[in-house]
Image (cartoon, rainbow, N blue to C red; front, side, top):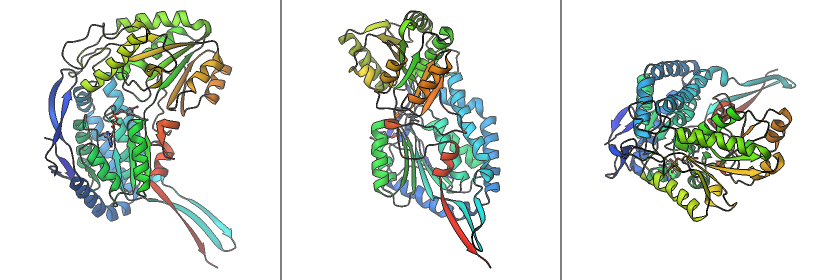
Length: 479
Ligand code: NAD
């Protein structure tokens, strides 16, 4: 049974219950995660509150020194952490390394905190008066994360929050708690004082205790839209600052003038990378006019050739399993829906050769999907790509803009004019031109719109710094 980390001490949860953590490649249980309870959250908040006065007054340069050490420890343990991700999540080794690398990029960003926190000053803003604006930490922050990026998404949150002088309670997904524990353990080893970063395992009850705890000022959440909306509502109703990123349905538009080999490779890795379990996964490819034939044939043959297998020992396979049997049932349900709706299965993942143990389904490509089908409306969150056909760019943009979500959208074209029109008119926050997955690097905000994000300030970049700080403006008169 996993323990919480409170004030740098491994501490058992107050709740007796637990949930299984699987190795999805084999379908076997490898650990148990506590279900969590309000007293766990309360103990972590008390530790974080006790640590706050000293940590928030620690010079940013001294905080940065601990972040540099943390970065060095993450690099030293890079391979070991990546293998842990493979083992508890089922990503391939390359995907797990990418997950961790993107997280380390955020630690790099946070190492620059003395410059990032620099304020503004204007002398003589009025007669004999100077004005200055300075950023202050907000207080005790909490982070609640999903299963699909066990390293990157936690690292979006606590390195930046701590660099800004806050203290933190981290509640990871109960499906991938082992990577979470390792990330926290290494930060403590880098020199964090007790109580600055606390780890509390658990599920729904733990999230509710976080949202209702008066000692928590800030909540960062990433997960499905239905939960993100409720976390935002309940957290803000309780007076907290909340950023809540939700699910997505990402469209990719293929123009007739696209480099078809580049487009096919990019769509394939976008739709089937991480077995489709990415909030930026390409889910619908809209082919405009005569692009349909060449791209369809390329995608069909590439998908049919993909190798699928166990990833827990870092074997070089093309695609790993889904996270658990619930995810597998969901994807299979969507494929059965396709059967009932007479959808054309260009590639049927259920027929793909997959290992008999573990939570596997092969890549699927479907076409002929009705506008109101769940395959087109819902976030499937598995390796299923829907192909649509539209007459031209305007129709393709209109089709993408019907989605209530607003994470990513991509166009494949050789035309600057088409790319510009697309980028300016598509109604979502992260745009790619001839890119597979347009997930912004750490210097930019991770800018979901519409039903993909609830709040004002996103993680990463300058928005991340603003989210974890509040501004004080001082006017001074000396004559
Ligand atoms: P999830 O919503 O089931 O869980 C996310 C977190 O919320 C977990 O820590 C979980 O323990 C907790 N939780 C689950 N149900 C809850 C409930 N009813 N009340 C309160 N807390 C609850 O998400 P998941 O399945 O772990 O992750 C996949 C989802 O996350 C997908 O929808 C994906 O698109 C989304 N996601 C979004 C982004 C983004 O940046 N927009 C990034 C990654 C993942």
